[in-house]
Length: 278
Image 1 (cartoon, rainbow, N blue to C red):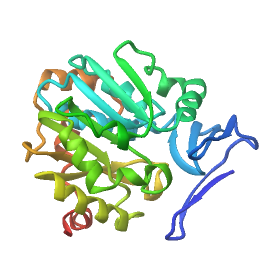
Image 2: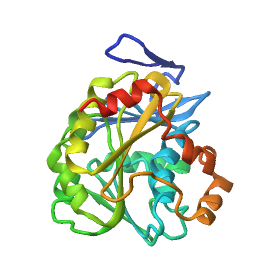
Image 3: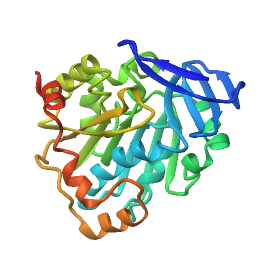
């Protein structure tokens, strides 16, 4: 049985096989793949839920298609974190994309995902993808005007992910964007992690001219509800820029559609208050 209890005293429980399919301690964290009948294989890091085969599309489609469909022609994309490969897979659905760089600090996450989560990690070997196993804090420092879209698919602000929640890091990410570029970062659960979310948006608003929250459900994440920060120097209203491409994405998507794209930015008042409480 897998259990994750939030600091607020509630959480989730999933019936799993007695022994994990994979368990290893990397330099940074404990990486495990669990097996379950209801959700398929599950990736956890230091005991915290990262993704499941059954509900991963909620997260990966939200973090990728909203920003990429808000860009007129995304060709170069950087994914920070996201070693499970799900975000890379979704990015590659856009026919405009010519190159994707994945910067993941923990090589064990990539190895375990390729072996035990092939439906999620299956595109990491695509010829358009370059994988860099290193610290994104250092990787991004010398990147200037390189990317159309940067997706910060990080863990929570603790352990190896802690350094990805600083003003200096966000400034370096902004500098890595081409003109008209977009950054989207996972920004925690507004219900389970409002303190961390508020801190993050304060930092983002120091760096980017426009910062807008969007949100949606993820069944196996704390609170069942998650948020993402859409950041840009030029885009105030994140609208679909290429309706034909968006409609093509919609055909095979489980979650994303053009109506949803417009709706996700209509966040509840309590989410808006957290994100705007600067």
